[in-house]
Length: 94
Image (cartoon, rainbow, N blue to C red; front, side):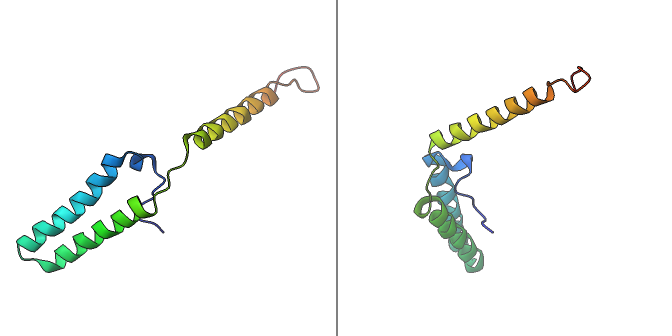
């Protein structure tokens, strides 16, 4: 199970990924300054994990693949609509 799905559309923008990592490491810095190393390590670990997931393993899906998937779904729904409109044996639509 992944905590961060790098293929989620919310992570497509670079500034969002930078902000997430910066907030995690910034919070780790705040915890270090205030003298709480346990929470600093946890926030730093979250920052390291988010950096790994959002920058090192980030491979965005091309928009063409998403458009093709939408086109396939549209064709399937059109096929279902036309099959529902076919008349039955007694001549009436089902």
